[in-house]
Structures are given as structure tokens and as C-alpha cells.
Length: 162
Image (cartoon, rainbow, N blue to C red; front, side):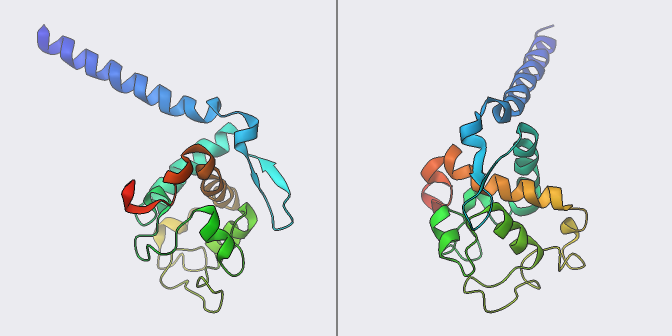
């Protein structure tokens, strides 16, 4: 009986944590879910579903190399707003990040890095990219733009946090 109680308690604990994780996107107000859409500064409000989906897709597709907004292969270039704004072309908005996920270039914009960075262009090399739609890419980009508002300086903060 004691073993069953522990098992039931564990299941309840996991269920409550799962419900809490799913509630996080809904708990974010519109101001927090408002992110920069394009280079002209136009904004968009991410839906709670886009927030949840973006987080899930980012973690499963990008999270191995970009945990916490850092770049494991080059820690000097992160996904924080400052690093994204200094890229050429600027990548500090949703549409620019979607463009990068389709056709990635080096930080200075000079060379294609499609053979070394997962992208739609290199979906034959990176199978996880094959099933991503434009809506999926938009949600992932929205996640990247939203994280500095949610986890503040931790996003892209490097190994001090992760």
C-alpha cells in the first residue's frame, strides 16, 4: 500500500508539473507576447499556442546546440538581442530569423552555412528540418524573440547560467 501511495503521489506530482508547464504560455500577457516582427520595427503578438509550439520545437530542433540561447559551437555568438542585432543582416526580428532558418549565413552575412547549420535549405542533411512548416519556423523565431523578456539576462548569458 505504501508503494502504491508513493507511485500515485509521483504521478500526481508529474501531472501538476505538466499542467503548470502548459499554463506558462497562457499566463504570459499580450505585452510580454509582443515581439518585433520585421526590420521596420512592426510588432506581432504571439498566440499562447505559438508560444508553446515555439518552445517545444526550439527545444527539440535547436536546443541541443542553443540551450539557453547560447551557441555551443561558437559561444561568442548567442541568440540574445544584442548578438542578433549585430549580425549582418540583422537577425533581431521574427522574419529575419525565419529567413536565417531557411538560408543560414555566417555572422557577417558573407557565406552560406547551410551545410553546417540546420536549415530548410539543408533538410537533406538535417532530417529534423524536413517536417518544419513556415508556421513552425515562425513559432521557433517567436520563441527566440520572446525568451529575453521571459528569462531576461539568462537568455544568451552563457555558462554562468547553464
